Amino acid sequence: MKKIYILSALLFISASFSAQELFTCYDEWKKVFENRGAFFVNDGAHDKIVLVVRTEKTANCYTASVVVKGGVIISTALYFDDDSYEAVEYEFKEDLAWSIHNGMSADRTTLDNEVITILFTDKIQPKKKKLKSAPKPKFDLN
Image (cartoon, rainbow, N blue to C red; front, side, top):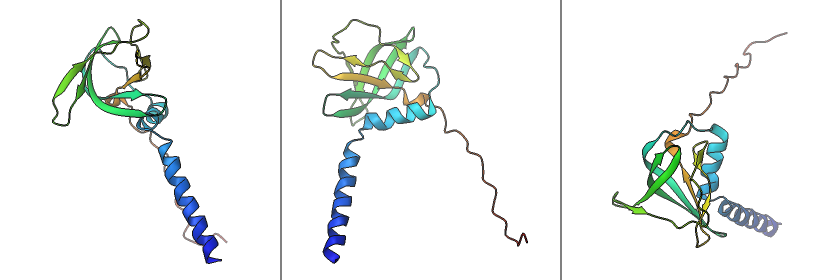
């Protein structure tokens, strides 16, 4: 009987580890944006936002800086561990404006089949307030 409990526990633990791998940094950020929404992204420089590089199997999130003009992303730079940064230019398959909606850029696919998305994390709306539940009675109602 003990072997069954131990085996069940091991299966449960391994299933929880594999389930955690299904949610990438992109999935987690996307869920926040979907749940809370985001404020309008103004023109200008936006510092220390998140740039996501996705392939069929991976998603990597990096700290970046972008410049927005006319509601469109016009330049990007990636940060290094020492807080220095360097401009990066991507070659995209399509020649479209890199638009922004709800604090997230449109997905753009590079010639190397990487999907690039920019997340304006500083524009996430605050968590909505929840109503406070009333306490249960502490006296006899009968």
